Image 1 (cartoon, one colour):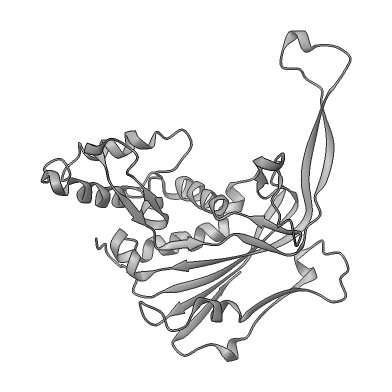
Image 2: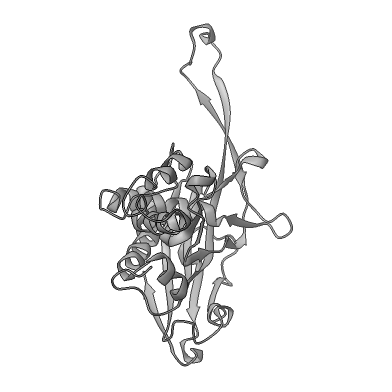
Length: 288
């Protein structure tokens, strides 16, 4: 399925962000403590967490525009949304054996996150099965540059929720934070998959904007101060790519400065890019 301005190049990117006095991604299996690699102590933020923030940004910035609704959102009944497209033209008038293809294409046109990240849309009835979509954009887990230290803080609640809770005793609770951590995630944009979902250049520019601005629209006491620090984009001159992604990612080095014993700010790290070793057919853009 083609849309206007469909991207013709592959992209790989490095996304760097940090957190101060917050929990960037709690683990529900560990009492909502910040996620970490148990063997190295490095902090983790899942790809699902990052995609959620991108979805929230798009919903706020462009959600009222045709084609920019969000499929995976709070309180959405997914099978109901999938079923709705089977009652809309041209899906409704399509031959029975091709309705699922027409429904899949319409879902890509209606929902930004479907044509960007893909979706499983075969969870409903057999008659209203829109199949699956592989999204052109994929993200890795973000991993902190240095091991993180989780701090737990006791908090109290002065108010009560029920009348029978009233009394002299305060309600106690716990809050977990990371004093500071710098995270690095990697991502990939497939031009060939973009052609299949209709992901175009306008969609790509919105995605870059989301990475740069999504934390400003996702503030909460639990997250602390989260900030996008750098977005490094490698653009290939061909649709299939001119170099392996790992070769490009190895050109970017993020290290804690040798004179810093305990990192507590972005300036405690250095980011370098070996541009002289950039493979032929690759251009680079730095945002932030």
